[in-house]
Image (cartoon, rainbow, N blue to C red; front, side, top):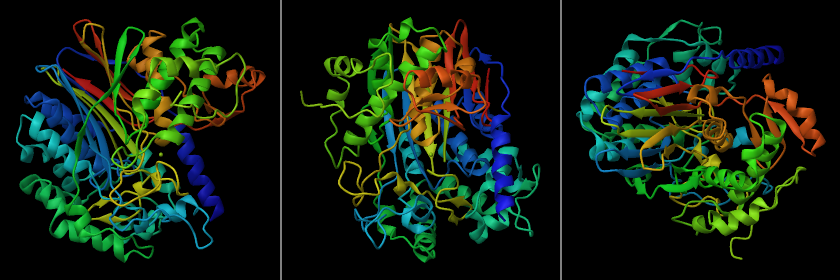
Length: 544
């Protein structure tokens, strides 16, 4: 068994490391970039028939929940940025999961009062939060949709009923997965009688998911949050061998929230992302703000010094993230002070020519996710990051979709701003981003999955484009690197491995590791748009 597990892990690594460089895709009118070709085709078809960027987002999400079940779906949550070209208005939508009303701060402590091992906490009903993605999409569609809601589910229903091919990535994820086969529905869908994942290319038919989508298409999101679907979700959570305490009242009471987008300057551009409960926007803007003050523009592109400065900026941002960031409906988050010019000036002074090691937070008083980017023919934009948290979430399947394990994004040890509480939203790292040119035009749409790595992935792509003048595809393909206020991490197998020893000479504790981003972006070019898709996953960009 150990050899089989090791072989599965090696197969996953080899698949994820086999990404090849791609050419950027250009279009004159509209474009979609997402993590699976079938999802891209669904979004493209909606845009082709005159749908809005938000219409396409609904179609893309429904297909991703089918073909990329390890990353997102109806059972999870999302954050979404929307730009209305006509109104010149940016809005952000929070579809983050919430803790059940019965949740208490000690939820993930064992009998001795110590934090549980992650997988002990993640697998089963204890980790499931109230899903928010569908309610959020419905709210945004009411405001920004053009086509009827019921007309946006066809591609996903067709692929679920007709079957879709098991991809190499999904097969590798399933081969490395230990707990999902314990769920009878998931085992029947993804595994053969020998207990191994079905072969690459096998057509996977998910009629339960198709039936769920037909209900939601006809009746709207309310049919998910009240009635038989909600009852089945609650039953699955509470009857699991590791039960949770989600109730039908938790589902019925869920509300998506429109929040103020978070924007800040970088060079001549205006960078906008998500505000708390996501820490992504704050941390990305802090990294950029420190880099702008620490001489990053004087470091040679892709050099050891550039990586040094980027890692040091990341340490500072992640230190503040740990101390200050949480759900703003429950704790006071000093966003304005964290991004204040004087505060960033002070933080940037901590960056020297040698690594400072683990950084302390400043004094403000003196990983299962996907991303897609869409631009429609009128110039409206969606940047949406969607998640069920860990690969395959809680490993509980209901009516053809998997439930999240998002509650493990709360701190296991109580006492901080991110401790669990009833109806509270866990801190996130998701950072869907839109960059605006000085005169106000959309310049770039970007985002990535990757758990707590997301912040560094997004910031890396931004400096690749805005500082190093790379196109969106080349910036996405840059080796991943950075620090989360621990070691300096460099993508294993990448050309940046050559920088490890020079960085160690600067005092960095360098760790080589797999860093599987899923960056998908679209940038403005003369005469239209150019899209990029991360070769570390299996997505694409397409437009007209």
